[in-house]
Image (cartoon, rainbow, N blue to C red; front, side, top):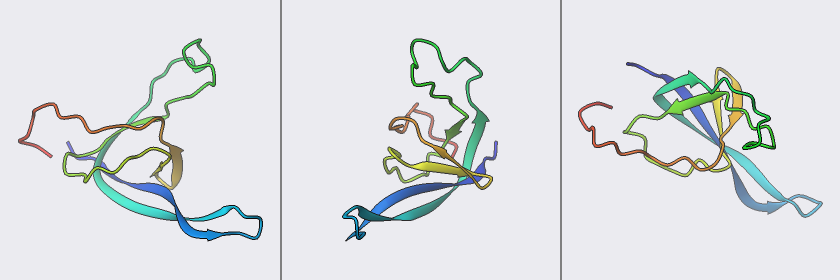
Length: 100
């Protein structure tokens, strides 16, 4: 299987503040190739387990070669549309090493 290239967008503080005293951030964009992108769950987002109505639009499976950095607070850009990462996904080591 071959995936597609997505962009991970993280807002990083520059160390400066704006005139109102809020921190100034810049977008740090990282391209990641060979990501398997599939549609998210097709369930009702208003059930009692998700009172805020969080909807999973896509599930992205990153290749094993991805140098892990936390995705908390990041966005994933797919086809020029940004999608917010839910939670703080972690790498999965299923013990299978022969493929990417």
